[in-house]
View 1: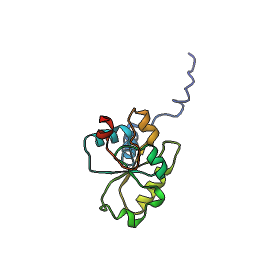
View 2 (view 1 turned 180 degrees about the horizontal axis):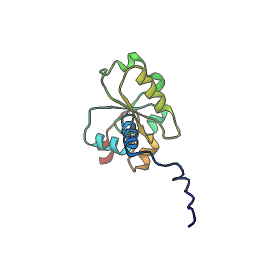
View 3 (view 1 turned 45 degrees about the horizontal axis):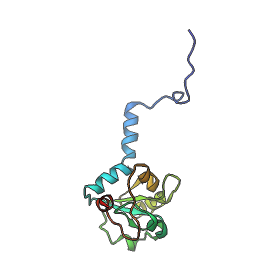
View 4 (view 1 turned 90 degrees about the vertical axis):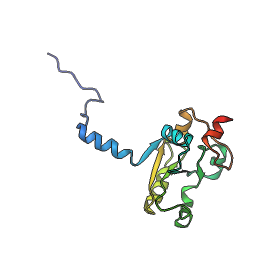
Length: 147
């Protein structure tokens, strides 16, 4: 009988199911995705604040509807005091090639603020087929999709 050489995928065995459950469940406490964010915004969710942490020029060129422009470098205790301490913030940047959302999440976590990253950022939003809002105003998913 000939020994089968494992593929690059199977060469390292998968984690035990209980370890995988713990790992993937934990990841969901740190991140959300574009689809869940879109679905929530489309249905009027008010239990989080969506922050576009890129610069104002990129925000104007196209942002996730409902997002507030707040570059990560402008996140200060004073600015964040505009929201209650238990406000959940969802941050995003340009996409997987950008670490602005990570920087924003670190800033917010240091302030003791609940935070999740919207993985994929603007790139992920567009890849899902969702429309962007243009200009300086947050707009909303229903407004953009009705246009």
